[in-house]
Length: 188
Image 1 (tube, rainbow, N blue to C red):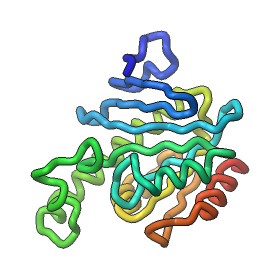
Image 2 (cartoon, rainbow, N blue to C red; image 1 turned 30 degrees about the vertical axis):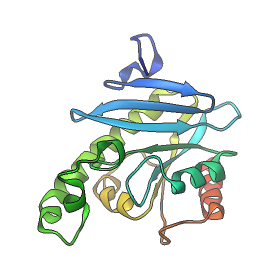
Image 3 (cartoon, helix red, strand yellow; image 1 turned 90 degrees about the horizontal axis):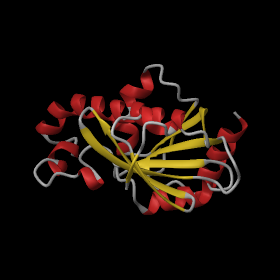
Image 4 (cartoon, helix red, strand yellow; image 1 turned 60 degrees about the vertical axis):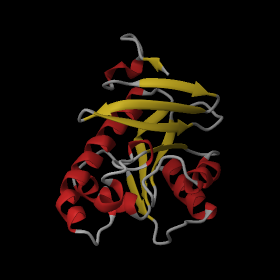
């Protein structure tokens, strides 16, 4: 990963490091002192492009659902995905299973803190979008599935700059559902 230099347009994002591989850019940034890892996949055409911000059912940036969403959206919108707290690269062998299982007392105690961390993470990702001239910060659609939708509730309830919200009722939304969401985002 490269550290972003001060003259870079993304320099306003705390602790940002990026690595571009074709249409996919892996990034990591700081959010409330926590290192957040994710990526953005851009369409082949020049921007600024609308953005689909995916929060998946398992909270992980890299998943079969994220790959399906990226393929479905790639013609019309950029896709951003990152690991939610205690998921993916941020997983904790001690806490993750207990803290994310709503049936445990620990989960009930930690849920407000997890939602605050997710809100901070989403705000940091929106700053990343705003700093990237290839992405259109006025056309961000939040797509939530399962755990990702649950943990983002607090952020989505407040004014956030998100243009649209799409919550999937199905735990594995179809590619056609993602294409419809991306097409709506591109028309906004």
